Image 1 (cartoon, helix red, strand yellow):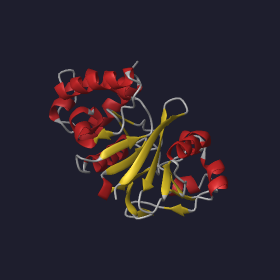
Image 2 (cartoon, rainbow, N blue to C red):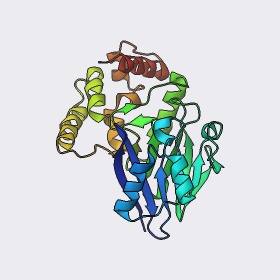
Image 3 (cartoon, one colour):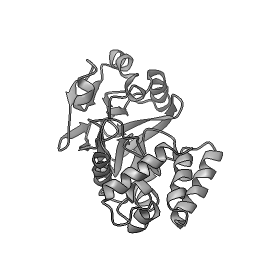
Image 4 (cartoon, helix red, strand yellow):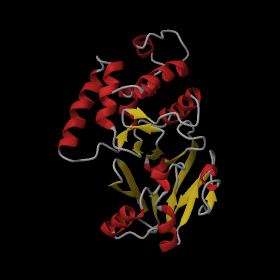
Length: 256
């Protein structure tokens, strides 16, 4: 039986996601930005929380965990960086580890850069990846605790996943990201079509995620720093891809 997912909004622009093994009923919240929003999602679906899978330590991804753990006695799985900051983690994982949710299996991928210990959960059999704040729809997270090279290497790992992978990220930033991306690749027709589609979704108050990795590879400039045309567009033809990525990320930081 396939995995079931339920996407919901929380805080100002965060997304929460529940994933459930339909055979066993095991249900995980991917991060927990706020307890009330997770509980509302559980009530709406009728699912029972058994696990919380944490991508990184930032408060807008972890603030809801203590209350949820106290109420549901759920298992909390997280990267080591979360354990060092909070006492509620039951199990720590890193690249090469596998996390079981009922009979669903997720491979853990180290994707540092936004934070030093950020991880991604890739449910390979279900073609779903929960990427936290490493990769966004037509964007990527700010490089806060890592380096541009570290973040670029993390993005390459995600880019290597199958095109059919559904990407669930932590925030609704698509329209703003597209606006910036078009300053890098104004003639990218796939990106122009994505802009039209995203505007329609937002106008209908629908989420723009999950996004398909295959589309991101064609439209997201942060995944395209090693494409010669992209390097040339930012005046860095022939430069190492990590440096090109750093220039694009710096431009995004300053973009208004």
